[in-house]
Amino acid sequence: MIGGIGLPQNPQAAMARRPKPEDAASHITVSDPVQHSEGVNKYTSYRVDVRPPNNGISDNNMAQVVFSTVLRRYSDFLWLYERLQSERAGAIVPPLPEKHPVGRFNPAFVEIRRRELERFLRRAAVHPELQGCASLDAFLKADDVTFHAAKNSKNTSQTMQQSGIMGMSTNMGMSNMMMPPQQPQGTPTKKEGFKRWFAETKTSISGDLVKSPDDELFEEVQRYIYGLDTQMKNVSTQATGLVRKGKEMANGLFEFGLAFNLLGQSEADALGGALCSLGDTADQLSVLSAEHSDRESLQFEDPLVDMIKIIHAVKLALHKRHEKRLTYSTCLQEVEYKSAQLAKIRNQLGMGMEAKAYGAEMSLRRAQENAELGRDDFATVSQRVLREVDRFKRETTEDIRLTVLEYIRLQVEYNKRMEQIWANLIPQLEKVQLDPNANVMGDAAATATAGLGPAGGNGNVPQQQHQQPMIHGHQGQQAPPMPSGPQINSLSNPQQAHTMQNMAPPTGPGPTIQNTPNLFSPGSVPPPQPSPQQLYGGQQQQQQHPGMMPIQYREPPPNGF
Image (tube, rainbow, N blue to C red; front, side):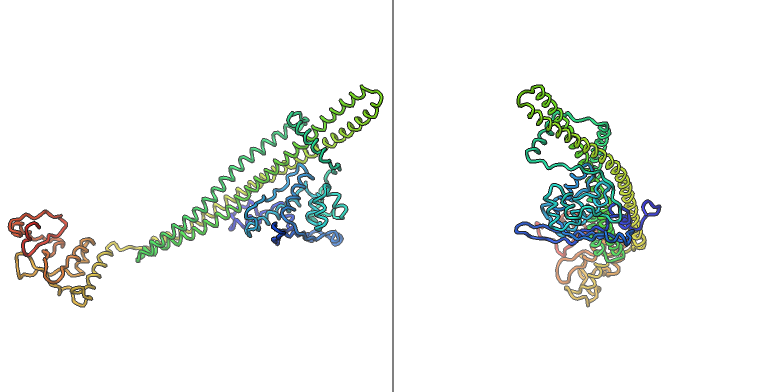
């Protein structure tokens, strides 16, 4: 139900339940697109079925129900669109999908065009101003021969009456609307058509158009339509930008989740699992954002684009009224011109002037008949445009309200789902307990030291059996043993533990490192360092960094060291 208090669980399903005017013509379908080739020309044909349901039709009326199936191509739909514009000038003819010279045989494009053509036919079938049009009946029910004859004929109604199809209702479930009778007009020749075009162009340039009591009303309608067109195009542009940003967000969340998954895999403890959970959550949000962008495009962007197309159809209807006004004004000017010409001939009556005056009088009578037809046609189109604009305002106002309402509901549901997904991740991160005394680098160093034996062995010889370094100045006296692996690991600073572990000297002859036991143990006092004179016989030793261990040699280094 539209406008309910509760939010729908599925906005797309809610939109599907939203009633539309064209739903009354659901018995008209367009299906089975098939590609054809005629030499170098290729086109796609569509199957158009009219299967009126039996709802509300009695057994006595079943004989009037006509089931038809025809094949039509896009050019046939275009012919119907143009013919409806001429047969019902001033009506808001539903928009037709545009031509696309590139990619028109792509399966995705063909499917989109099929849906749009089906919507066009359904809208035309339920349109209150288009019911009973001869061209619509011919399109839906005529066979190939009759339809091609109707397309090539200037008077479709006469062709359909001869074939016996005219008069059958397109929508069997609805009553036909009484339309004003159409005045038959003779088909103008090419010369007459050019003269009429020239006269109308001259009238349009001069600006001498007939005045009407409804001119101010139509000027107000025109300002409203053109202003609405500008504002709707602006809204549509912003909606398109939002949909595009939503798709970019979906891609960004995917990359975000991938980065955290890689980061979590590099951590082996509980934090790594939590980071991987964050990456999986970002992947879920990426899928959710992509689905949300598709729904925004379907339920918000596409309806706005369709409204803009309908506004363009209203502008075409207003233009048709302007054309009828221009034709009527041209007919009035022609009547004035031929009246003045007839009066001039009568003032010059003489031998042989009677026949010329009679011809001028007949021409004036035809001009007056055309003017009367132009006046009636102009009045009919003006009234039709006013009815159509009134209907357009009502339907468009309701469509905009429902479209915005569905968009808001869509955003509410999307943000609730995102909030729930993020909220489910918080307990997982709160359960992660990290050990503040953990020393990853110290453990790794202890493991590496325990695995090495003398001279690069496999670790079978204990570390305590390593040869101890000699202390300079006390030959034959061994230094205190180095701290074992566990003692090194007990150091509070990992960098210090790593440094102490690397201080184990290699076996064999060579320089020895002065070993200070319990150098880093708390409360210990480092032993005094020998002076440079004691070490090298008076040679000064360069001052070393406080954090570095001094290197001692058994013998003084040669000069120039």
